[in-house]
Image 1 (cartoon, helix red, strand yellow):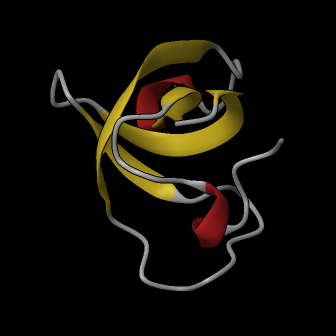
Image 2 (tube, helix red, strand yellow):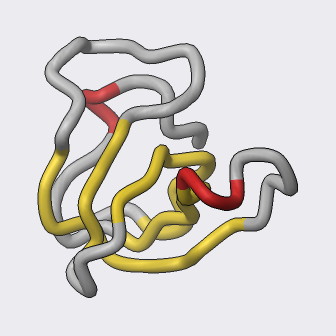
Length: 66
């Protein structure tokens, strides 16, 4: 499942995000969602989230459903 639809993403889910500094390379960072930062129901580049370790990026893929 991709991370473009807000309804698919919930705190506690394991996801891959792309950090702002990695947008050019597309390098993914794995982590657990703490907060959803995008208020829109859909975003074409991915819903922005904060991971439990404090990193912020856009969800590229959802690895595990809660």
